[in-house]
Length: 321
Image (cartoon, rainbow, N blue to C red; front, side, top):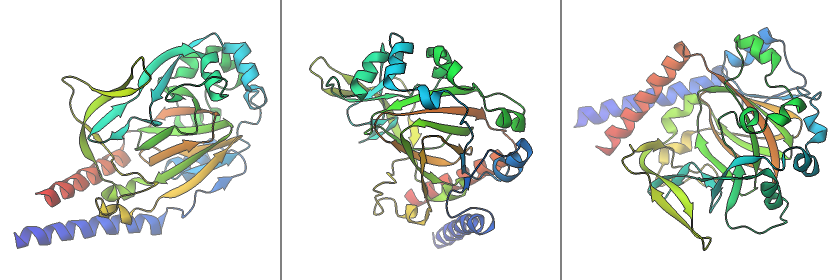
């Protein structure tokens, strides 16, 4: 048992040094700003390859959406369109709630009804968030694509492909995206309002707790109350239980070693969120954004992360045993 404990300590020390070295060698202490979009080669060399986030200004000033997308314009243009909306009692969709991983109730409703709620013209139980991540801009709201580009030319050239999805976001200020990661190179463009991101690099994976949860879905009854309904015969879902806004260090002491970066992306700004970075998102009320998901290259960088992930899970299991 002593030998096993010594080995576990050695492994934890190696993982901690791995994270520390990443910060020393290439990670920034803050998310830097670029005043204009770079060339495709420069962007790949300086940001995609090294897997580092940045905020880019003046990247989509030419989009009509920046001056057009008022509630009045959206009502006139797409008010009658029926769209998918996530509804929760507390603003947390796809998040840990007690001992469950709970997904939102997915509701289909006219866009104008969503605007009524965002403008507080009507009262409604629950928190509403247009967040359907299936290229909902092009699939549900194609009328709006003439107000922007459906890909980012210099990003598409840098990667040699078009985005896999273009997503439209419109949210209540209470709507929160819990800490998670994606396998996409993500360009996140804020049209109105602002988004607040907490970012954690993949090299901090040893300090990010994962647990397995029974998947479930929120369901709102006729009286307006919500219940949690388990997904029957579904495998348990691995998810991050820690809330970076109020981390429980007593329960998750390793998270103290993570070094989150916080940034605010304002209207007219674009965040490059690299693949595999953990992120947590909030927004101002009624914020509108569009993001472009480019599938990551599943190359040696992905292999390295999978190894780091496996070692981190092994440490967690050994500590439980």
